[in-house]
Image (tube, rainbow, N blue to C red; front, side, top):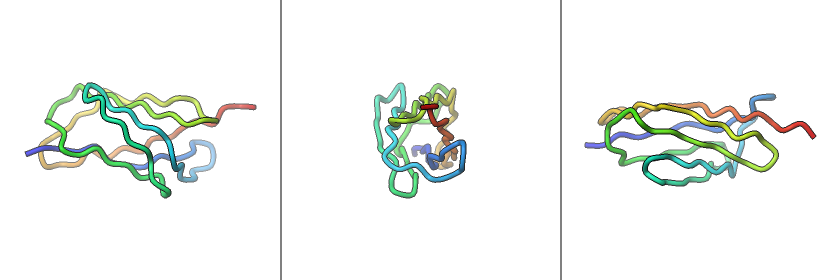
Length: 87
């Protein structure tokens, strides 16, 4: 059995969904890109509590989330709120 980390990427300032954000999960080395609606999923993950997620997109500050806990058969849900950079 395995677990997953799933959620959506939002603009912290206005709550709008953010597409094409790059999400990197360690220690797996996995990388995903958020969909048009901001959604993402990392699945097939071994259970544990040492995961860290880094989210980045041009025009936004990098977001770092962790440690994240993954349990067998139970999705870990996360809202990634990226802060826009001031221009």
